[in-house]
Length: 132
Image 1: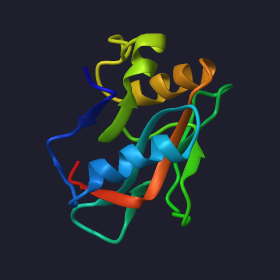
Image 2: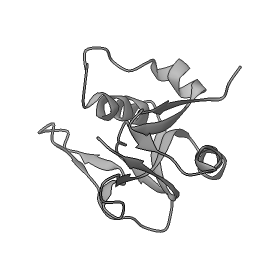
Image 3: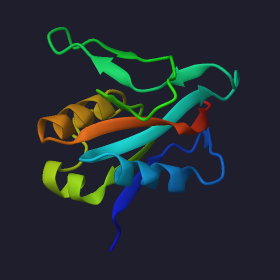
């Protein structure tokens, strides 16, 4: 009986109210399948590791966005270290593809979510610090 499911790596530090701020994204933006915070480096806390990413569909190349705007942004994919997923999105799209054991599973999942009509968003209103 939940509306959202969070995936959070165990090598992260999170601020208070992060979950509440992520949940607010779903009410402020329509058709969001999943969202996440801006990810900073744990060792260099002012260095952005990821504010989402872009996918090159013809090359398979995917890259991080390392600049932060002041708004909730629609992106092509998010780092899997912290994502909040709408349960309905999981029921519609399915789970992560187990063939991606480690790395790019979140890229594939975001691609499938957007093909289904959902948006993937990052919010600068909250952040995490990732050790990995």
